[in-house]
Image 1 (cartoon, helix red, strand yellow):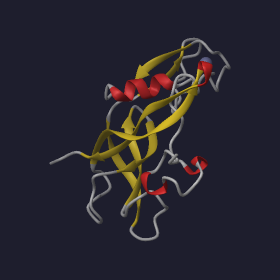
Image 2 (image 1 turned 120 degrees about the vertical axis):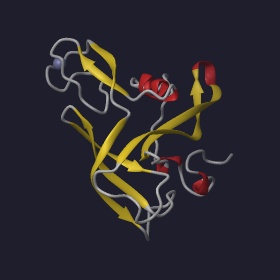
Image 3 (image 1 turned 135 degrees about the vertical axis):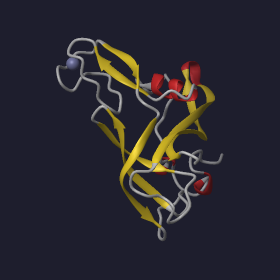
Image 4 (image 1 turned 90 degrees about the vertical axis):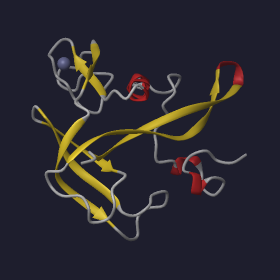
Length: 163
Ligand SMILES: [Zn+2]
């Protein structure tokens, strides 16, 4: 059976080389994040007790340890503050250029994300980028009763806003 994960690694490497998380609700307590991504929503958890809004989403508030959390939407567009662009020797499973950017989502919120759909040398500091959601290879999971199932997966990056 081929090893699910990064296509070029199928059947060549153990699934521990898979770059993406197991998203199914049977295995992942923040699976709602991925469900929301499928709806093109970029979300995280907000603590109902102290109001802290960390990213990535949590199952317990890192500030006050409460597990009374709710899902809130984050902006899906931001501005590139700084970035790195790898044009050679990128890790297996990625294509060059491999771009990572520190993105300002506004309201004092910043995050690092991969930038896709961008040619080498095109990205500039200050560029507007928006959320991009894409399918990644499914993961084979075992459900109750030993039933094997294919769990579909999505992941996100940001991409330049077309001008
Ligand atoms: Zn809290």
